[in-house]
Image 1 (tube, rainbow, N blue to C red):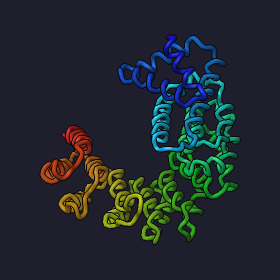
Image 2: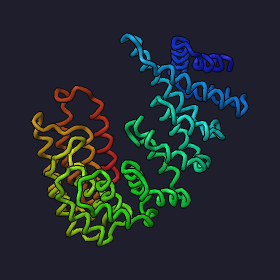
Image 3: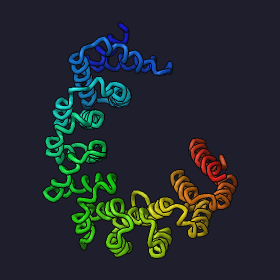
Image 4: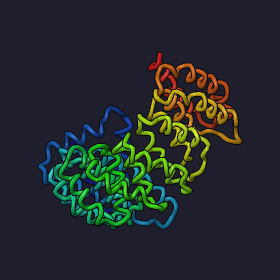
Length: 388
């Protein structure tokens, strides 16, 4: 007990060398397995009052800020990275909802930090105490543009809002009311949250339909296209808007159209040809448009069984193309998921895909690392077992 107390207090030091030494000692304990560090911290925190827990966590956040200072030489820089990685692991343990009760205002205040890691930790913490955080939601949203500038991403804030909005009409209503008055970047964030809410976001569908119908290539429009499919699938007006944008010149718009179409289970005679056609669309810098077509077919599932021959043909072409068109691990898994989702009638195709992989993909001479093989094999075995 005393050792964990000393190590945690060492982490709160203003001296980076002491912080690093404490982390190394904690890591040695952690490497012994059986959640030793987590159990020791839990035991230690049971001896603390809520105010003492709060003080310890805030002090550790300050330690994180110290490690973020720029170093003058490469060795120190590497050491700083190691410290940050290990402190991140530690915070996963410390951000236990029972430890951080009553701290929502502290974490909201920490959002004004200039250090990206502190903002990230604070958003993660706020997501774990959603009832408390609800009281701070307008303050957080008002800070959004500043947070976005510092992080360059709203991923963590999106996760927080999804957590808070789920089955919470009050927070949903706040987002609905703020949508039209928001900046473009905040509208995109809200729209992505609405996508995850699905049918719960029906009250905002008209505004999203207007946005999705605009004649532009904005990220806001792209997000709205995906959202309307998630919120109101099998709606004829939604379908018409999606289909009318399926040949849009901007690849990021087309990707979101395909995501929206993947939510439909009616009018498939009009939707499946669009998805099949998109299997040849290799435009995009962060993944091909065709990736989204494959996922959409898998989402539709057994009703897309007629597309199996073309899916297998594309898969085979990419596997046999070798180094000229090598299909990466995620791509293989994407195909397996799509075909495996089409039910028992797809088992024969899945078995043929497995034979192709054994013959052409699992060759150790072609792959530098064995790990991707293990992931693919596991995914394939699970689907073959499920379909047997």
